Length: 429
Image (cartoon, rainbow, N blue to C red; front, side, top):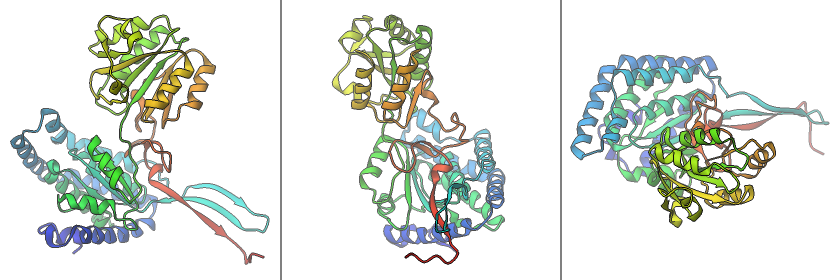
């Protein structure tokens, strides 16, 4: 019996640090098993996990009903309850998503580069799993399956710490996934769910350097901020999605109107939604772009020159340029050309996604080269900032840091590399 099973009834039996250490050691042992099985075996394990999810439908939906009832009693908003709620269709979608990950190409073992030195040494850089990944997330039970599938497909073990609101759902989903793995001979400890909601366990995970190889937070700003502030383990995350669209002087007016409305209003609550619009002083249709946004239901807050474009524009405060609204609210500034637009973005962007609308190829290339964000776009809506839209099949999140992985992080982003050196008796002189 592993720790995951033995502590499920009494998770307070050990300290948070001891709990995380033992879970991590079990997970690392399971990861060593994953490291030596084939691509086909990993894919087969995920298909078995998807089958087990479908077979456990009644248990998972009963557990979810407990979480919904508790959430209603706590007064959770309708939006949060909707994120939490599962039904037969949503659960089938979760199982389908696991199977889709199984069908993705395995990045592990890819030879990134190879060379032979003059002394005959043969060097190659080869993709390998990161190891044990800790994922701290909030109230979406689908993350339990999605994150587990992505980690396992890339050869990693995973330690999951879900939100209290989805406690019973997460446990039922993890139990089904583990049963699927065990049915094909993969240790259940490859997918672990922390068996307690004690907040001290999060702190223990964040400081488990040498045991957990990387932390991925999935949730709101306060969660991500805490993880980034407290972690002693490398973190893959973004804090804000303060995304800009700059309408250049040479932009096509119809394109500018279409893309700005889509970038802001298609889905206002996602991290790729535009939060600031920059309009060039030489763009002749700025008033129609602003008017189109307002008429589509967006509240617009602007600087003095933006206010002069339309009487319905409200005054922007200094805080607006650094705010991720995640709502039908937009800040608008009028800028004096490409250089000023790039300067504004450098001062206020969260380095997530920034876009330019222009028919000027030279301006487009300068924007691509000089804007330092994880995703930089030309003549496209920032709402495309998504792993699925990038052809990655699935993503574990968007990374805005400059090291390891950037932008949508899928299977390749859950790997690192090692050097393999093959000699024939060479001794260094």
